[in-house]
Length: 495
Image 1: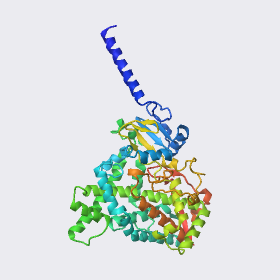
Image 2: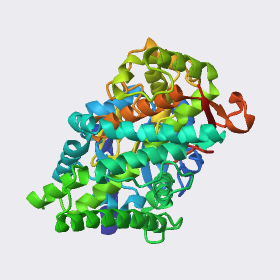
Image 3: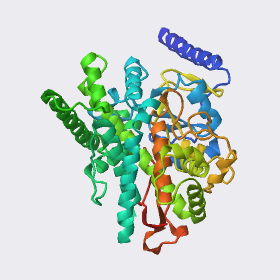
Image 4: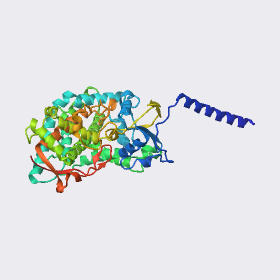
């Protein structure tokens, strides 16, 4: 045996021993089960147009924790409440880092966004400022009059449609209500005419951003393609974020000009953020304000709008549910009046409808993806470093091992089921849980209950073109939020 052969043989032996040691150190731990990957593409071909549905079907074969090779990326999918609790609560710190999608790198959005930042001092500072200026209980209570006013404007628009006997696009009207509520809270001004049927560009921009982020993007699975942008997602995101960025810049600069002129000082969120900037520019500056506004517009309007549209669709599809909730409303509130937030606690069936809608149609079917910064043990499996981790909220809400008749819309199930949707019970986590839980949850729940209750207490509703309830199209359109594929149109009439 010559010297080269001896060295080569020793090298191979060392590799074998090292690999064996690694295997032994992990004992019986291994990757979660999953489909065998194809060359190059892995299991990308299995995602389809509705990844949340495809992944739920695969989970029935491979189990509630499974691994897939998506291109070059190891992906672990969680489809049960028990394992979701492990990830979001028991091992929250290990799974709290975001898997950064290529789409959110446009305009460096991920470097300033609360949704995508790592849990570092900047994130904690921004989250604290967001809570104190907008989302604390005291702030929400102080802004209740704004929400009440915007709901009354929504009802007035419905009254106009009712008098003319015209069908209205529910999602469009609700979007304007949410937009004007947010804009008044932030800037003390409306951004949309609540009595106009015309579309607004801002809605198209926000919906486009949510759709692009939600699209499966080849660059996320093949980072080597980053400079090519085969699907044009990054190019379109640059345009959409550019429009939203200019919009925010204009509003901030307009307020700064007002302050220079010594105009009347406002008591809105923008004023509070500018005051923080004046006191300590290290905590808040023009750039951080702009990106916080981008966060609020991108994530604060669309999810509430889509959930309300789904709730109205389910009520219209199930007339007996509409009658039942209207009876409850009539017992507590005078007919044809908007409801107030203080009334919601006396309306258990209305709350059940909201919960059942969030169970069957979670606004985010797959929670924003996470990653692990080192190998992590989970349920006797190893989650390799840099893996993408997805939690299929849609599948958890339809898990037949917990939910009876999971595919049937049955709000009354919650009358006897003490289930909290604010992160305490993992059988239903539409807003996530743990450090990454959606901060807008308290505001969303207030708006959903008041808007839905007011619409149902003020009018009877029927589908346009004499469509029968059982014929209503309930097809989904996948994105970062789960919208109806076809907008809901209905005709309001006096009670």
